Image (cartoon, rainbow, N blue to C red; front, side, top):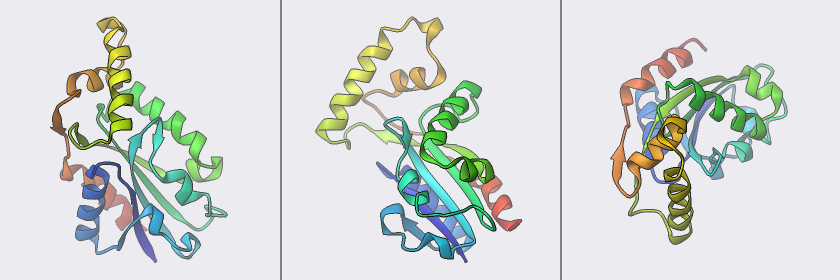
Length: 177
């Protein structure tokens, strides 16, 4: 059995999950509605990069006792350039704190670009983003990484880097199972 699970803060991870589900016929479920993850042989997790981690990923995989015999695909969705080596390294370091070593090492990982409409976040998130923006703006341009620059460039705007064509690689991976 296969399942697509998503953790979405503002809709882009859900949009990717829904599109992948439509393309593959695999059921799509929000991370907080998953029951008995052990019964699935193929688990595709699409999660938003949010507050230093992948939204819902830890909760999703904490009930998976072993990766043995499982096909695990994880796709992160964030604003920063998904091909930037430093950005990928930062994402993976964060993922290692959320997943067991076994699950992290057995997962096939993909990086997708998302989007954000700054009119949607709640008050708490807006305050947090404002503080991060002020801090990031104080960093000299030559010392900013791709993630920091993306946050500065998109702050207080409605932006979307969603590219459903990027799902083709994930579809190919899934079809190998």
